[in-house]
Image 1 (tube, helix red, strand yellow):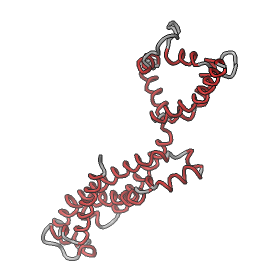
Image 2 (spheres, one colour):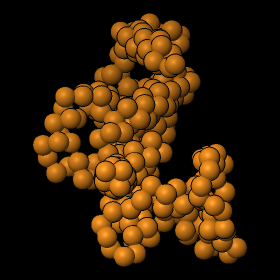
Image 3 (cartoon, one colour):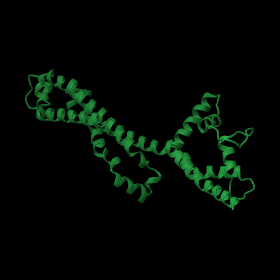
Image 4 (tube, helix red, strand yellow):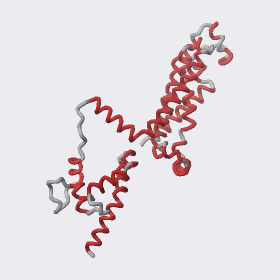
Length: 273
C-alpha cells in the first residue's frame, strides 16, 4: 500500500513536470521554452527513467534539481534558490562574436512574434512619414516654410495611424476572440497588448512633440518673415499676411491644437503608476 502511494506521487510529479516548466517560462517571459516544454519534460524523463518504466521517483527528481552527483539525497532539502543558481550557471563563450551571435539567436527565438510586429509597426510609421514629407516637399508651402512643414506634416501622418490603433491592443474581448478563435494567435503576441498600447502612447507623444514644435518654432516664424511675394502662395490658407505671431496661436486650429496637447499631457501623466 505504501509503495502504491509512492508510485502515485511519482506519476503526479510526471504530470506536473510540463505544467511547472510552462508556468516558470511564462513568469520569466521565455516563450520559446514554453513552446518546447513537452520536449524538456521528455528530457527529464529520459534522464530519470533510463529503464523506460514510465514513471519517476521523487528522490530521483530531487537528485536532478537539488543535489550534485557527489551529494547524498537523504536528509533535509537544500536551499532551492542557492542550489539552482550554482547548477544552472550559463556556459561562458570566450569568442565575443560567437557570444553575440548566440545572444541574438536566443533573443529572436524567444521574441520573434514581438520582433516582427514591432518591425512592421515601425516600418509603416516610417513609410507614412516619408510619404507625407515627400508630398509637402513638392508643394508651394515648401517654398515658404521649407523642411519645417514637411516634418510637421510627416509627424501628423504617423499620429493618424497611432491614434486609430491605440485602443485596439486593450480591447480585451476582441483580443481574446482573435487569440482563441483565429490562427493569428500563432503569429501575433496578443498577450503583450498592454505593452504595445504603451509603446503606441510613447510614439504619439513623440509625434505630437515634433508636430507642435515644428509648427510653433519653425513654421509660424517663417510665415511672419516671408516676403510679400512668397506669402501670396499661402494666402489661400492663411488669408492676409498677419502682423504678429499670436495670429496663428489664437486661431481655431491653434487653440484646439494646444488644448489637445494639454489634455493628452494630463492623460499621459495620470496613466503612469
